[in-house]
Image 1 (cartoon, rainbow, N blue to C red):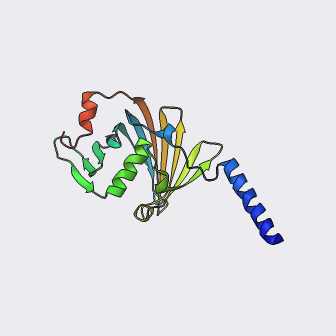
Image 2: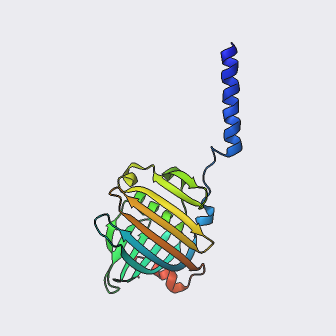
Image 3: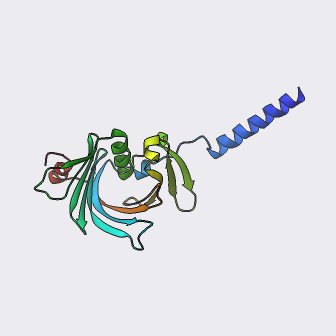
Length: 194
C-alpha cells in the first residue's frame, strides 16, 4: 500500500515537471512559415569525397507550399516542387521533366523550403542557444534519404537549412526573403505550363 502511494506521488511529480517544462508540447514553426514570397538563395553541397563544396545560387518563389527554385550560377536550371511532383528543366525553351512524383517526398521538401513543418513528420530537438531545430525524419522512406535536417532562422527574412543525407554529405541552403508580395510573373513561375 505504501509503495503504491509512493509510486503515485512519483508519477504526479513527473507529470507536474513535464507540464511545467512543456515536455509534451509540440514545436511551433509558425515563425518559419512563408505562405508566399520570393527571394535569393545560396547553396553549398559538401560531399564527403570532395575537399571543396559545390556552390550554387539563384532565386526562388514560394506560394502555398509550391516552390519555384531557379538556379542561376554556376549552371542555369529550374526546379518546381508541386503537390503533383518535382520537375526540372535546364533550358526555358524545354518542357519540364519529372524527377519524382512521390507525394511524400514532394510535400516534405516543399514544406521544408516554405517553413511549413509538420511535427508528425519529424523527431524534433531544439538547440537552446541558437534558436535552431534538429529534425530527424520519422517517415521510413524519407529516413532512407535524410539522416537529419537543421533548421535555423535569422530575423523575419533569412532561413538556413542544412540537410544531411545517409552518406553524411550535407547541403547548406541560405534563403533570403526579399518580399512577400508576388507579381503575376512570379505566380506564372510556379505553374508547370509556363
